[in-house]
Image (cartoon, rainbow, N blue to C red; front, top):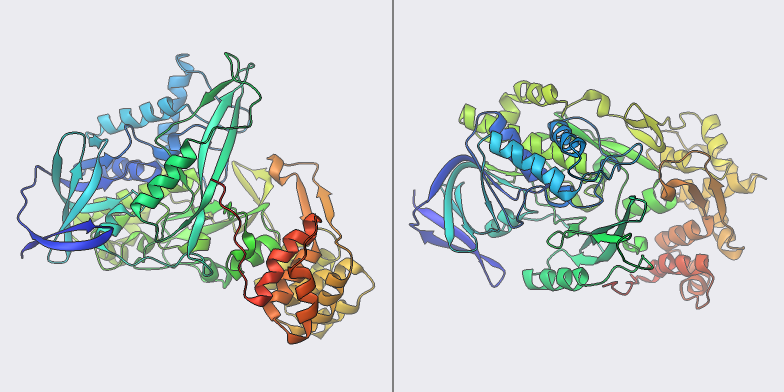
Length: 574
């Protein structure tokens, strides 16, 4: 069948007939050798495939090798990446590079992790093209057959049996594939970030994440580049001085895009699915994280996210997510696999499937899937349908798949064998009442949101309890479910004082989880805005258009504006 060339013209996908000659061929072509992509290349080559990789940066690893992207954060453990980290540890042990490790976490200078990756790629015979961009892809008979790369000097055209898009959807964009929607109110994704680090006079590495602005999902290449360049030029302002003792570290070509546009895949699995108790039948690996969306305007996020972050205050907790192989398959292109934050998880869940170790496992899962496509001469869907046991066995050998990583809800302040301790949600009305009676009702509120405890008249009776916290927390719980019996208590909260309860934890892993904040005034504003009861118009107008300096009332005003259909944007921090 005739070959077609897919490229972009003024940002729009275009297709033309092509008779271009390929300069090289391989089994698996990996576009983007970042955190996930480089592990795809390593995994596929480790299964005996001839692999070629390409990346715009001058080295492998992407954000996962940049300063301050540590092992700490969250993410589930296990996989091929552990061998890479052991190589990096060996380089540090030689004393040539200064370690940045501190107790309980590990991090590697960019050069060390990249050297470990490059050594592995060399050993496996992976050919790399650095400083290159993918400018076109080729199809024959509805299947990808290769790609065109442009580097410093010329074009290179490579034929491949399987292509892995590890470049945040660069290949998908060329093909004009369908994206999943970003947040509903304005189609924006999570903010991007620039990570820098400062080594102080005592040899300690201090990290700082400079937040950029939220990006429109449909932003063009020129707009994205302008924003990134403007933000990269912004000086860090957290150090009082820079001298021989205080030094700044960073990697200029790396911008931390917290959320790429998610593409439609053979199976789409969203945060709503997770909340509703739906679980993938076939799991390649488990990811584990909090919902790490850094957007400051949480009130503009979708209701499921607001339920989790604002109403249940679940930021100190993580949750595990099973990732099926179908989430890695671009819909309608059976030999294109995705490796990165652009898989089919959707806007909210992508903030929970983005930690470094999870991205490395995702890359491994894509690489092994590609290798089985090659060895079985079949599509990725056929591998998942017909050869799934063999596929998962290969992932289990490295620890990428580990059933113990399916941990449900975890407390991020309580380590447990290299992971995090599993939390038990209330299961009975008595347990729920105890949880809602104090200043840390998060797990009780989530149990209600997940329908783990039946809400009967006995529970609704707590709306008139003498215990103020039980009364208010019950109203929040019922309000999340759209139960109008909560309205009188929610109104009373807004007519009262802006009380805030702080719980200081004796044990915590990171400073941002040392304190739990309960403020039902903000929650009441959020929920009454959802109900949009005409009887609340005067009250909501007073809350929504508050013009004072009370921090709680200012935050509540943003949520209350949704009663009037107003989605208030913050000024861009760039």
